[in-house]
Length: 498
Image (cartoon, rainbow, N blue to C red; front, top):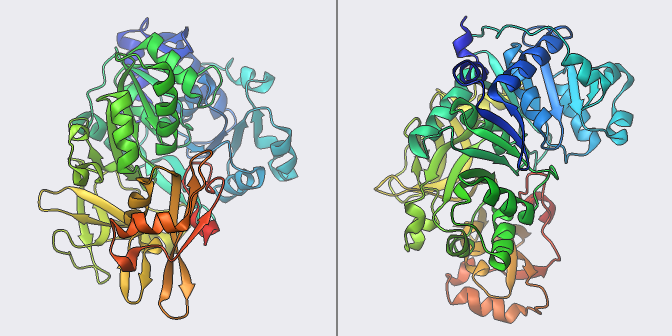
């Protein structure tokens, strides 16, 4: 085994080369250099190893804060396994994850509800941050960076669980290193002048990208509020400049609204990477007009973190809707193919399930061999997403395979209907699902959130759809909501709509 295989080696290497380089900011205030951050990580790793053995799981259920970052890297430094958990989950869901992967330690913010939800058998594993017990761990003797094998487990990524209990994707040090290399190869070279700003939950894409920016020697910026606030994000990014931030499309829409009102410093953002949910073309045009040429889309899954395909900054400048509606081309570090239900490759521009292969792909789900066997076949990850590949290798997602509507024997992809409805000026948000129908098998139903103060009529929406869609694809019913149901990652929960 080798310390170089440990992704925490990025901290040690930069601290050795440039100990005085800025590493962590809270707002605009500097907190740690790489030298002082590495010392905290090494001491915290020593504290963790006094309570856990190599390979033990350490869960982190906290809002975005500097301690989150040092906990992540201290866990890896100590040869342990990080289990980042979305802090917005219900306490019972956090307890389920902690039990499922049998955590040795669970770090969380001050939260009475979570403490009460923990069974007595787990009470000893809870560490509140930053209380006395956490501070005591930081007083331990520094632990040398622990050697690991490339395929040793580093992160258990629990899926968002929109259709049932979440599954834990097993991600190794090799997987996370491959993800970091993919970013540098196909999105942007990371330099010490970069700033990585944490706005989305660190249990997801923002935390995964900490590996990329730590390896590049960049600085890490935390919002003082610890949550996504568009005004705070814009002002903090303007103060730092050369900022990269990961966001989901809902955050992009809110950021665009704020920036439209107050403006945006053209030097504030180097890159805004978005993903995790569909970005509709109409929203993308607005974002491009307001935020400029800093947008990059990535398509990935927890099972292949952040790395299946990417729509580059240059491609975002296209005026071709087919390009903007796509998720770009596969990363250079992976193979992507589309297959039919029998596992045979489909022709260009023909719908098929997206399969991906490469060092970034997980080796399976934690303690779920059945799900692992269904997802991984001959080294290929079956994503469950339906899409098309054109002759140039550009990938366009149509929908999740489980969301495809079959009406009268014809396949209807909700994404296509949503794209059309989203262009109606009175529609703020929309989600399309299938509803059982005795005659057609399923019928198309659109759940619509009107723009504030707009009274939408179904006849007007019908005319709009018929002007842009085949008649059989138009919704047979429209239902109006004040808001779409979303999970803690901002994804629409279509199961609840059904």
